[in-house]
Length: 287
Image 1: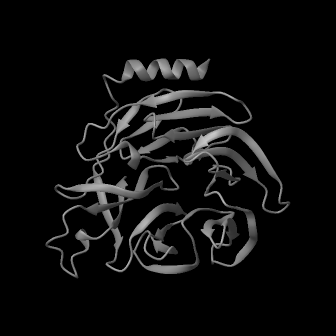
Image 2: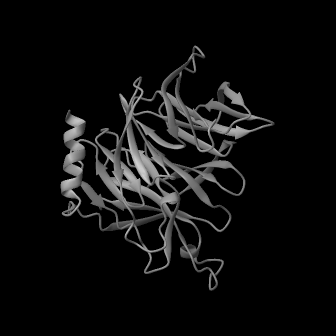
């Protein structure tokens, strides 16, 4: 019932959005040699995947210093439990590494279908095996025992998991759905069209705040998962021509967001002009 009330509230509040400001930007990192995507944040460091090489990098969120972590793949997530890395090595596979890049658990999942992996807010490891194009069953894995447990029959490839709920985005329907783990039905929790030009629904990325109460639906808004209040994002550190790419991540304190943006027009880019390359930014609390 609480969820039903929240959705009813969302419809009412859609005409009067929350005015919580997020006006502050801080440039963190960019390089003409790498294209950061799949941004994640953990314990003072931003992790990203270089779309050109598949290598995973770690960036100090304070000084922007960057180093290669070691493993490579096409998608990953990070938590205190380690790095969950999805790669293709003759077949799709999911491996877990420690935060220094040392292999801990090999081929927890493997097979012909693409895989997406995420850690829940409690550091439990979840994955979707994309058996239906861009969707498939949501499973929970125990890396130590190797057990695999299906917790929801079907979610999209862009998903986030809390303590007892999962959220996923359906690009075909342009909606975010919420589903109770171990249940069999979903609720369409949010639907809408972006007001900004040149921002399309297929760019949507999800990340659940550490407190589990706010869902980042980038590049559009922050959604309070209990009240339905929407806080619109204004993540444009450039004057014009910017789109979000690749990933978003909450900071550990839940007061800010790390994301990357790319300048659309690169015709006048210089080798030392970072703003024309994919750059990682902080957006939120200036403190």
